[in-house]
Each structure stands twice: as structure tokens, then as C-alpha cells.
Image 1: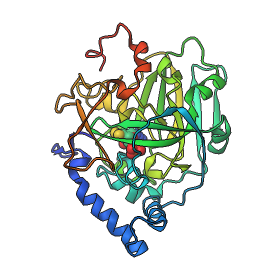
Image 2 (image 1 turned 120 degrees about the vertical axis):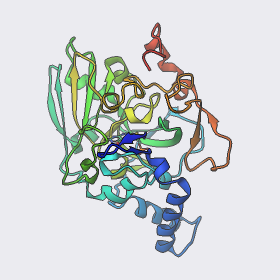
Image 3 (image 1 turned 45 degrees about the vertical axis):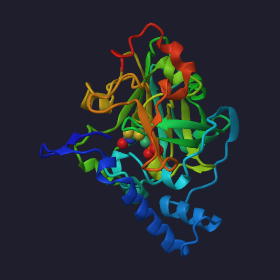
Image 4 (image 1 turned 90 degrees about the vertical axis):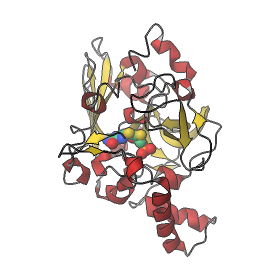
Length: 325
Ligand code: MTE
């Protein structure tokens, strides 16, 4: 996201500016056409796309569709959701994660759950998948950079995991730490952020039924570039709150120090609720472009308060959302 400073102090424009959409789309078409001999539109085309953009073979991971959480809007095609990514551990360019994340090893994988809980645990990813019934939920994801997607995720409410570990009365926030392993993640050489990538939520936000512990998308395991093997998705907040490839979940008393907030506090607040009335200091947050759905020359669509999830508003009653942005 974001204009950041390179190690030599120069500004790096954020990823979408490094690779314009036409460029990565043509790269993508090229790879897919090579694979299938240009049979666009066929099932083979879709399969080839999935192969091209999920270099690591995915496994079927179905969730029961939950109609209460199904945005009735055109979904972003899988190939866009899996090739236009932010995952700085694999590079700053939008196409870098799809290109380089095959080095991420997602088995064995454990998540340690610790801090202010009565029942801390280290849980293996396969047990985490089975911890609660999987649902398919179609959510909007709005990136702070001004683009959005509609994605069918597979997972269950994070609250289901939270209740198993029995947080104590001191647990006021939840901190998510994601993997930072230089042997697997070439982007860690960049000092764009202070690694590991850490995100956090207030306890009520973490327990909100919308907050999804996410293990798959489009009926299959997460592609590495989308945060395999486990991430969170918090659909009323800007996408950077949804940390990928989580290794630790810690319940804490104080507001966690989160990666983007620490790096540029005046630009990325801890809350980061989608709010068209609070602009980023360097660009408007009033509109967005739906990746893979809206053409480049289409009029941008209006961004909705809380990304169109008004049911979360009561958590912020009485808070000045300009101050707590
Ligand atoms: N998680 C980690 N570990 N590293 C990242 O760079 N980028 C965030 C978020 N989670 C990021 C991350 C940002 S800025 C966005 S918009 C979303 O992931 C993008 O998710 P997607 O690529 O699956 O659409």
C-alpha cells in the first residue's frame, strides 16, 4: 500500500502504482494462454488460471454457504483475487505474491494462542480447520489504497476459537502475529515495515460474528499469496487489518503496536474502519474500484460506511471516528 521509504530514503510508490492493472493483466493472460492455447471462457481456461495463480496445488475446502453473510454483488474472479495482492513479505508489486509465495511452507503449521487466556494452546493447522463447522461467506474487502474485491471466503467466526481458550477479564485486545521467515519470504529483506507484520483488534471487534478466521476461498484452501494457511478477514475495516499467514494470537491488556500504525501513525490508525468521510492524508477514501469487475474507465463506485456492514456501528457509539480513524 502506500508510499514508503526505501532503505536509501527514497519514496517507494505503493504497489498498484508500480504495476498498473493493464500490465499485470496482460502478464496473467499471457501465462494462462500459454497454458491452454487461448481457449478463453472455457472451464479449461478457469482451471489453467487457477493453476497459474495458485502455484502450490490447492485442495478442496468447502464451507456451507451462509446466506446471512453473502454480499449480493458480482464476485471478483478467482484469478484476480489470486494475482492482485498485497503481501509485502513477498514483495511490493501487486504481482509479486503470486509469483514468489510458492516458497511459503504451509505444512506443518501451528498457531500459538497465548496471553490473557485460561486455556492457552498451540494448535496444528489441521486441527484448526476442524475446530468449528466451515462456512462460505461472501464479503467485500476494501483496501486502503482504493480498490476492492468481493470474495467467497471459507472459515468460521473467530469468536468460536476465542471461546475455546477462555480469555480472562484482562483481555482487552487481540494481537495477530504473522510469519516472518527470511528463508521463505524474500520480501523480508525490505525495510518497508518492521517485521513481523502484526495486526490487532479490540476484544469486541475480534468477537464480532463477522470477523472470520479464514482458511480458504472459492471452495479451496487459501492460495499462499492470499495468506495460507490461515488469516483473518475483518470486512468492515481496510484490508491491512486482515493479517495473512498467522502464527500467533495473543490476548493482551493494552492496544497492540500494529505494523502499519507504527510505521505511519498519521496515515494508518489502529481502528481503520472503512469510512468514506475520513480521507487518507494523501488521497480520498470516498470511492473505490472493484478489481476484476469494474473496467479501468468505469466511474468509480462510492465507498460505503463500514464497507456496507452497518451492524458494526454500535461498537463505535460515542467514539469520534475522525480521531479514532
Ligand atoms: N498480511 C501480511 N502478513 N502482510 C501484508 O503485507 N497486506 C494487507 C493484508 N494482510 C498484508 C497482510 C493488505 S494491505 C491487504 S489490502 C490485504 O492483506 C490483501 O489481501 P488479499 O491480497 O488476499 O486481497
